[in-house]
Image (cartoon, rainbow, N blue to C red; front, side):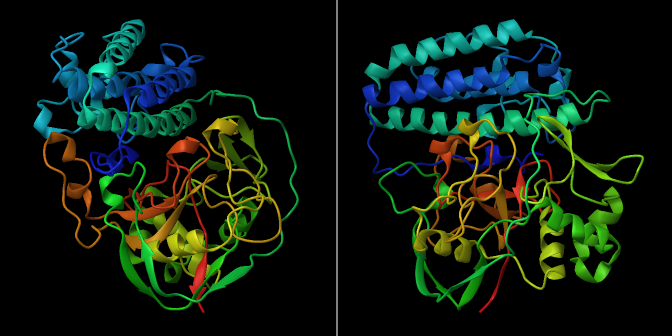
Length: 433
């Protein structure tokens, strides 16, 4: 999936942001510890599985996030590599950094074993912490970039692990989830937005990937946006209405993908012997819930659902403008995030305002992933991640239930190709005013 991982949302930072060694040591150590905590209850066998080319083994994620700091921080500072062979084994797709082990074959890497990868992590963590007091401003910015990169892989660890477990006949449980039976929420309420001349993009003063810059003006016609995400049982009605057999609802490429892949429902849905639908989660199998947002849908499915519902997907600019201008202090504005340890979207809370803005599901937009006006690809190998992927992808906004809280922001531009389904991607509707 060389250009389809969320990992591709890097690099880049607001060059005006200043960091100190003292101020960045704790976030660095915390990020490293969080990654390891996500994997601590897994077996070495769990950590080696690669269920599809788009999903990497957990062991590879543990190693690659260490490779990043060794490649861009420790190596240039003269620190000897932990193992010279790791330079190619755990490079993702930085062409400028040298050879790379083929992505579809990361699951072939039985060596180094997991305990050696964990030793590699300890070596890199200790070396970076030792080096921090001696780093200049630019290197500290790169460390901040590495922290954000590590947080992206925390999300990937859980999304990839879910696919690995789903692919196994025993469908293991990552963390048990309490049983619950929800109540149907109120019907979508469309909030009218005046539009006009607006600004989107990162405002500066804090970390941001290069693709979030520069902040710029856009003109928006009046529009309306749904106050919450589409739920599982609302999507089930779409399935039961035979929408997967109605080509008029689908984009041409979407219908082709549906036919080629045999889609009949979102990823992780199946029908039992009685014909009832069940959904696989990191907490096990359960029935669709009336108040839980649907996730693991492609852009094609989200677009088809919107047509079926008499609506459309919001554009990137509409989504960001609405999220930035509507009140954000009410209950429900944030959805579930990684720290909540729900590992699945949660119901919306409260009755007023825009809900589930940051958290629960990444939300497909109707916008292609393209550079903002005035965007320039950063120089050097670390600049390979964003500009070269600005083709054939669609933008998602918000955050998901496995996104770290400090990693979520309104200007974040996630992106995937339209058929992608294994991420926690959901649906918010919009319509013309």
